Image (cartoon, rainbow, N blue to C red):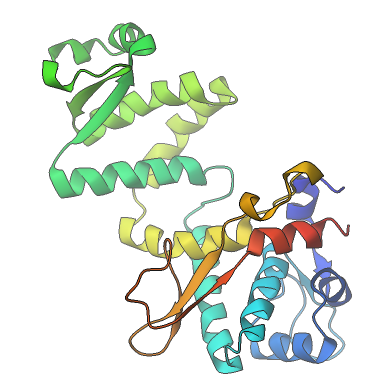
Length: 268
């Protein structure tokens, strides 16, 4: 089995895309001509050797499933453009698979502070004294006894204070604590300049096709995977739902993309 780093950094020829996805040549050629799939190298003209990044292979798997559900080719093209726009936004913002979790944390903080004027930060009891030692300004905060819980305490803080506290959170919980701490310090100022609404608009599309799922054989069953839900909006356009399908959606389809990508990348 090829490791995730090799999959993510390699480029794939049209023939490899066909083998990985099982999509017929006529469909692939049409999608390439129409810009449904965008090459990382090469052009759209004859005789040019086009090579594709792994997320374009994932996108092809996804769109082929929607095609099987009867989604029209024009609708597939418009939907593909939303995925391409999301990838372009993440690239322009310097967002990657490595720093997206950090970006998501920061965007959630900013979103909540914007809506309520503060952030309620939970500190686990096991680390409470450590937080007070590293951030002595916490001692000036008012901790209402009614907010004291079994395993953690809630502190009402500002955005800047919440970001400071998140540093310790990454230091304590990160898989590579020292690296996570350093990356946080160097990244946070740039990530704070990213527009929150644009980030969340692009994130679900970007995340959907950036996954490289390679579960072990004993993990592969229906309960392991979750479906991506696509629905038609009031204008009849197909959209990717941010969460589970709701009762007011006119029509929707579910695609188990992680299962498809796991099967595809296992062929390498």
